[in-house]
Image (cartoon, rainbow, N blue to C red; front, side, top):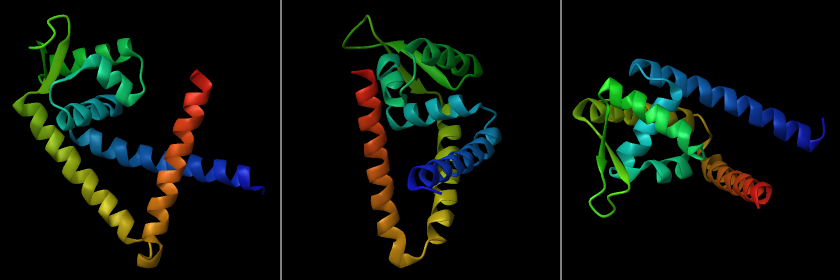
Length: 147
């Protein structure tokens, strides 16, 4: 198998593994995977606006707005006018949202700690470097596609 095909197959396997990890964690908190990602980003960036949240997650603003509305209805997120720009709406987590955020973060940190510990110690830095390079290459390709 040539390198590009092998690269693609490893990436597909990685996507499936990450999807399974995310799905199992989000199910505990009674949220979809996309809602889970929003809870985490809002938890990490209290006061973020929908526009910036969409940009961070590389999603369409209207899709993010719909998902935020679902989280508001569940009682996980509060939408408030920005103190600095009344045209903008900022997002914060409710106490229930905060509890789910902490659960998701703690569980995912533990899962990734376990996975990382299975990588031989002398290869851990190499894996981190490879992931950094991989993400940079994806972002460059994404940027080239949209220019």
